[in-house]
Length: 266
View 1 (cartoon, rainbow, N blue to C red):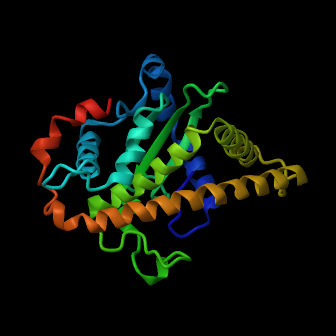
View 2 (view 1 turned 90 degrees about the vertical axis):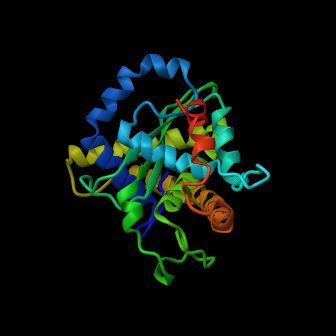
């Protein structure tokens, strides 16, 4: 599932999939090497992050878990999404892309890497593309149908948190519902694999009718999933805007939360 910036949801998903599959041998290697960890760990897992990327993640985490003077969560909806994944029993790896080496206009993505037919433990990944988020246009031209303008009034780090909220919404929506996760595995992941194979071994200039029907079903599912994630993203954006005064500078609370971070992510 991909967060839309300017292209259609389906096209963004396919673009990111193609980029990740063609240039993602290193990621695949990490998946294989981390098999033992995948068997034991669940929740949000940061083992794929470099030291520098982990520092960026901790900055995001501090905003997520910010509290007011009475130690009440400033972002309750966002924190709830986080904690639902932490306690879900599923494994969600965090990945961060901070350079423009990879050509993509997606701000973030969520994908199932290993589907568990029993629904006990899916393995998935959330990827944040920081450079794309930094460069995203903010203004009337990027307003959604309901008038919501993503990122409006937010700092760079707050933008990252907004996108994280969107992808966490996908994770909760999909991973905690076996029927929905199965549909995503069959209609999104497998369809994209078939399409990728066709592009790499192109034997004709047009898709078979059955493949076109499959793509239509995929796009309809993506549209439904995206609408739900965008609704939650709007709630997260409102929380971030409303909490600016209580948070003050983003340095406040660092000492209180720095020691807690290692307990929340692995």
